[in-house]
Length: 70
Image (tube, rainbow, N blue to C red; front, side):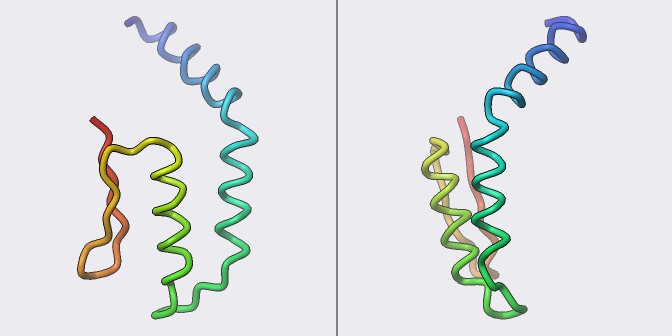
């Protein structure tokens, strides 16, 4: 895929998912998440990743949300 075609594809997808992305970000910033109290944000990120079709979604022992596609 040439560079110009790739740029066009990225632009097309960003426009296609603009509202979806804005809604998900809006949900995240509404959740209170003080240091050490991030559980609700972690759960929301995991939900969004599962909804988006990630093949694997998990949380490690440090509370990082990890996702895999492919």
